Length: 573
Ligand code: ADP
Image 1 (cartoon, rainbow, N blue to C red):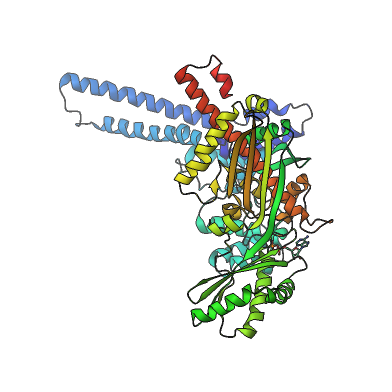
Image 2 (image 1 turned 90 degrees about the vertical axis):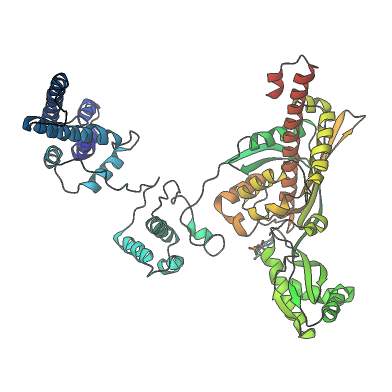
């Protein structure tokens, strides 16, 4: 029986009064509000008295029985009454002090929350009635836990009815946005309905503070809230003569700090430089014929340079930014996989290239009416799957980024040596990955940096699979004193328009990098610049992690062979 809870209407009034009082004179008052009333104190005293008296009486009786060798189970009427009184008083006291203390309110609830809870539990009950209830009712189990969100969802009576309809299934959850014409309300109703249907709390999944209109029809269906991911910054990254502050959304501790250290090493060495080798998004439909011979005829047709111009005209109608670059057919029996590649301006380009492909397929149907289109994507792209075609041919932006890190920077900032880094890179990133049969994974942790920047800037995080393909090379240069480090990434798939890039927080991160939206000077320039920033950040991340590992090796070998008198703890830090 929770006295504090049952007293809240009165306590609430005192708290309110205290807030209103300019002198704060209500402080003592409010502390008194948490004490039980006199009637309750008396009741407690009576039960305490009963409990200890009968306990004493029974102990005394049992001692007598043991002394006189009387069986313990032979009880008299007075002993039975004493036993009943003992159990009853114990139940009361346990209920009061045990359950009450366990279910008391947490200290960090606000006054309003306390009042809200109390009001919802005992509507219209006056303090006196509550006190009476405390003294006469038996301890009851705590009421079912009310789900309280970080920002409690306020539902109108009308919305409550809609929640019930969604729960009962008479209104499909997916139709809420179109029915209500209000994306925020739709999300709130769905949030509540999901809790009731599943019986699982969504406490902690925020609802407020997000523009649900901005995702309608393009980013996420049936929203119930949003997940918060912290964004840190690494930098400045000095790349191609410009400084960038790189936003990274991650929950992996040390990742931002480590990338930041790599940026520092690059900056202290004069910066990194990058070259964009290729820029083209791919989409490969799979088509089928009755015979392999017919499939081969289409293959030859597509490979004939004389046909490229007419196919380009058809393809490019899809968008003013889509420009067909190449067609690469691959045959498998009587099936043909046609890898179209096109530039896509500042968009990552999947939608754009798909529209162009559809145009070409419709066009080809005229000359090849027996061509059966099985699917607009036949996995020869390859989108979101590790595939050699991306590693060898590239997809999206292909970038190489390099820097020469001075010996003193390697020693002082990275706390290792050029020799150790070169050796580790050869044995880990090259040989180790070969041993593992890696596909594009000749690096230390490119995907860490790629994923964090992708999430921060609204890229498709699933494309991390191929976008993280990277070979990291390290070589001693300048008579073996300095370190040449490079990352080659053939499939960086990024855009600065479309998809998640237009959402407020992602857009802010793109703005921080100076690549928000469509490039005004030259379509595609922003997306290409973003690809180089990704590669530059990966370079920083590779440098730092490799150095940490190399330093760890050094610490171990120093300890083993006692070759150094340096303070090991300083090396590690
Ligand atoms: P994706 O093809 O990456 O899925 P979307 O098709 O969602 O991207 O977004 C591209 C849209 O943005 C197209 O409608 C395109 O016309 C428009 N757009 C505006 N400016 C540009 C630009 N500079 N580069 C590419 N697309 C642009």
